[in-house]
Length: 296
Image (cartoon, rainbow, N blue to C red; front, side, top):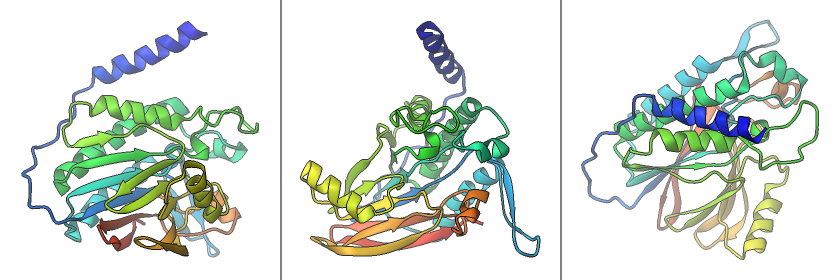
């Protein structure tokens, strides 16, 4: 079993190394403006394919891999159109990269094996990051956390090994694909990430916890750190809420919308929102301009 696993990993690496290398264009260094951008993406659910209809049999949301790609390509153009000027950009992927086989209903939405989707998604996201870097002309750092749909587990069983997450494979594949691309940094996969952007300490998580205020308090006490904000996805809808005060303003919770949008499961839970991504800028004074980009 170990030999088969090692051979599988070696074949993936060899397949990636045979691909044409991705390249980034050289960026002319512009005068610093004192701003850092944060782009949050969540709930891609790659591999899923579905149509959600409304009360009058109208199509409320349609989704597949090509639609996901189109939404992300259009997102770059939407950011460009706003002419946002920052010194660097943090891209935070908040989990559920894949649909995976989380429940019986997942089988109805999958159109190819999960491993194939994993490789295809990692290749697309690598290409997309290079294009984002080349068109916005800023250095990019990728921060990644895993989601519940990314966890490897037998169908209908409880989660016993949350660290066994396909998000790790996706991040490692992206590292291999853009290892020679100066200007794009890929940070290690983690279940929870904490990053300081300018003067603001930010936690990133997928967000299965119902009470994110308790989550941010727990980790602040556990690691003896000040946390000003927490970003999460999971609910396929976006909202923000103040939960107190911090040194740089209010202590905030941000729920980020999904790339896939309303799906049959979220419709069943009566949770509905348009597919979206979130962009914010940060200065030494804290959280600045922000926008939810509606993608469909």
